[in-house]
Structures are given as C-alpha cells and as structure tokens.
Length: 446
Image (cartoon, rainbow, N blue to C red; front, top):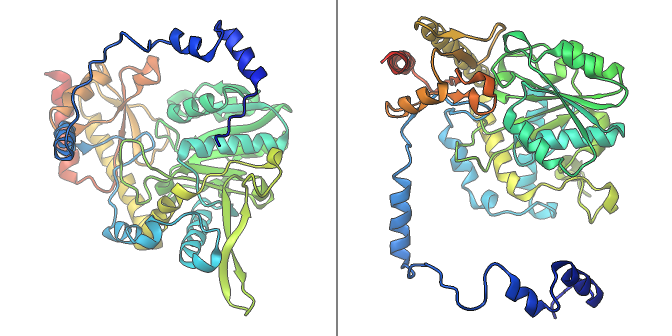
C-alpha cells in the first residue's frame, strides 16, 4: 500500500491552482503531451560500447597539467599508505558505526581524527566531519545563530566566494541578514571594518585565514571584539597552513572550520571532499553531526562509542542539528591516515616547503615586465599577481602549454579581471616553477 500523504481536499486545492479539473487533465496540460510527441533518442548501447564511450570522453580531459590552481583545493602529494588504508573493505563499505561492539576499528579511527583536528586547530572539540569546507562554514554560521539567538551575520568579502555563494544559497529561506564587508588594502580582510560592523544584533563574524587572496593575518583583536559584543567568531582555515601560522584557537576564535581536501584526498571535480569543524567546549552540544568518545566497557576496558549524536530520532525535532555522517567517515579516515603517515615533523616540513616554494615563484614572477604581487602582507603558499592583460585569457593560453596557471579572480571579482591567484605546493619542483614563469611571460608578451 503506497503512502500518499495528500488528502482529497489537498488534491482538489492543488488542481484548482493549476487550473485542472482532474489529474488526467493535469497530465494533458504538461509540457510533455501523452501523444504525438517524438523524442530523438538513439538506440541503446551494449555495456562494452558504453564503457568505450565514457573512455573516449575521459580522454578529452587534460589530466597531465602542472597545477598552480588553489582557491581552497590543492595538488598535494598523497602517501600511498592513505589509499591502502581507505581501500580496506572494513572502512569503505561500512555505515555509521551505531553498534560500537561491531565497529571499534572505525570508531577509534574517527576518535583519532577528531583528536588530530583539535591539535591542528587549537580547539577543544571536533566533530566527525561534514561534507566540505563550504558546508562546514554554513553549519558554523547556523550554530552561531542557535547559540546567540541573533539573526545578523557579518562576513568578510575576502572569504572564499565559493563558500560565500554556498552560504547565500543555503540561507536563502532563512530569516538572516548577511552583511558583507569589503576587503581591505593589500588584499587583507579589513579586520578593522569587520569589527566596526559587529553590534548587539550580530550572531557571528566570519573570516578566512589565509584569506582567499592568500594573505595571512592575525585576527586576535577581531575575535576579542566579537566576544565583547556577545558575537561568535568563526575562522575558516587551510589545514596545511596550520603547520606554520597561528591557529584559530591561539587567536581566540570560537569555531574553526575548513576544507580538508589537502589532507590526503585527491582533487576530483569537486568531491567527495571533507569539511572539518572544531569548537570551544562550551559549544559542543550545539555542533552538528556526531562525536566519538572514549569510554570503558563493563569489564573496565577502554572502548569507543558515539558520545553525542544530533539525529532527529534522538532529539526533539526542533532541537535537532544537521546530521551528516556515513559518506564522510571515509574521507575523515583518509585525513587521519594522511596526518599519521606524514607525522608532526613531516607536516611542518610540508608546510615549510609550500611556503618557501611559493615565495620563490613570487620572486620569479615579479621579474616579468608588467607583473606584480598584490599581497602587501605575508602569504603562505598562495598569492595574487596583477597581469598587464586579462587573466582568464592568459590561463587559457597556458593550458595549451601544459599548465593550470591559477585562478582568474575576475570570475568572482569583476573588478579584478587582470589578477591571477597562484598556488604552490610541495609537489612542484624548482624546474617546474622556473618553466612556469618563462611560459607565463611568453603568454603575456607574445
């Protein structure tokens, strides 16, 4: 027996709005009439033909480019151990571990992931991940609204435009006021301007460090200003950068989020990726998702279990938070496998290589006539250069030379059509950096 929630009265009301007397009349009024319509659909293909067709399409993609793309997603080296671990059937076929007696391995891996994220961000409590960096930032924003009972959100325009677009989309039907503050001079986040906009109506202030243009900043004063006005402070951050720069916890932020793709997850057309979130202990029970904790069983042995769960069936519906779990566990396990494989010293070394190679390339590009680095402040592995020509056209020309040259900022910032966001990771060799500078100069002046 099908479950159809609409009563006869509901159906009558909907048909009246549509101008139809019966469901049959409604079908006849649709864009696809039931008769007299021909579809230009080719005949079916065999399994072999479909596979060959998909392979031909795949070969059209440029997969051998030397990448200088960034903007939140980076081409890092991934140790072979990561895929070896995540390919184990115990991990990649498992569901959310609600039965601890049958899922100790998965639960322990998640617990270690949470512990690593807390150490990395300098925060007290981490959840067991969300979908990606953008949804993590949105979830942090809605958590701040729940905590403060306020409806205004102040956000820097130097936060990733991709993340800001996601926030705008997800909150379109929420009664929230989103206040964007223009970026400051030298591609900074304009911390002073953000602090001025915080009022007793502000639920939270949101920044990114390093910001979307690559600039690294100290937001300690901004976090303190938010705290003084009773607002929640949120920082979206790049995890590899935390091997060098001050952590959100050290700067006094209440919530830290970020895109965890750089922690052992390959670039793959937008996902699946990993959103991490860590908070101060006082906000723990307002955090979405779930938290794995360490406990003792009836015989006094250490074990792991889901400590806090925000599912609708566990809490009254109006108090439930977002439930994001099963498909993200594997990405979280990839992240802890990566962090365990490289270790504390290795993590710091990777950060150092990214930083030093980015500075080397910035110097090389600055020698090109008409090219200048726009970041006045420090940057980590990513920086913005100003070109004497359209950045998007230059990127297109460099594709033919085998380079993904960077991110043309004009795509999201119309006033920055000549600016290019360039990212460097430990994967790029010195020879590649020099060759890229030579190719960029040729693309500009020939």
